[in-house]
Length: 430
Ligand code: SF4
Image (tube, rainbow, N blue to C red):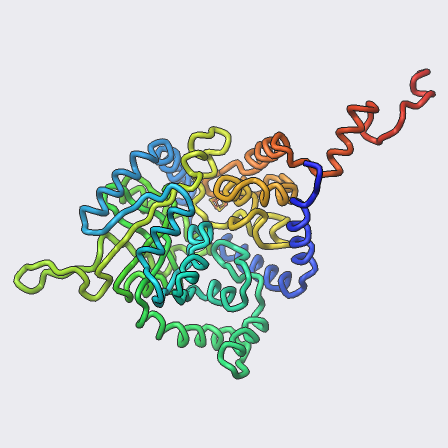
């Protein structure tokens, strides 16, 4: 590739992030809080050592039989009167979710990386829907029209003073930058949206195939509202989230919270198996009691099957999205944000390459120093540095060679040295 246009936008972005003082303040506060909370949680949960190894095996088995598990899940969901769909790519997923939502509706959403992957908010807004993010971090960055910086804490780069400014603009009056007061503002503002929403959209942390159960793990309680208050619940999730049984899912749930946020267990784990129902009057089943009348599970492939078939990158599908590797990454600690497109850190480069394509990843792949820290701290011991190296090799083969590297290569080929120097006479004489 002759031009370095593909490099320019990411370079500019990284430069901007590095120079952003407030971003670095927010990040360093968050990294410090996370690191000590995780260390404390892990020291008090020695049994996790064994469980995380079991989870690795569960994920290996699940990815091996991913197609079969998709079929089982879809049957199980239908059996409990939900509906299930398999979207081959982002476009198909956008269409399914948009058709299910309709036009001009009020939509509340809980955090969903899969939703970001397919650009669901934009697609729904194009059809005249009003979409409200309800996770506090997502709500903050939605108001600020920014991109998330972390998979678990999307607004980790925004310090409290900036949140206060954003909320002051929202309410048209100055607000305090005390953190509890800021949380209270979001709570009051969003409560009314939950109650009047037509549709709630969530992701899922795990899905158990045999029972068709969707697991949603959270601390705020917003996903509970989103999946429970509106009459229609749409859950959009990747096919790699499926594990065979409930007990497999519970194993994943034990590992996720301590590694994600340094807690023993998240405040809320919702298990949803079918829409809300009652048979309290004459044993006649009626759907839509206090919870949603409709439950739709949209399973997304979008490159995941390709990843599963590729031995070099299959391991990326084992990721349970705890986000721990990001806080430990020396590059992430400085710049935050996504190295690739919607996914973060080194593992995000692999995910972005398979779900979004080469160009955006190619511009960011050199940000990885391959220090290996991400593998060391990963509960599933995912070898991200090895995969990043392989990705880099395949990008180079695809023509994504940095101009400086191309110069060196040319010099070696033409002049036998990387310095673009003509053969020196003294050297030829020995
Ligand atoms: S690669 Fe490992 S540490 Fe990083 S988010 Fe995935 S599971 Fe967590």
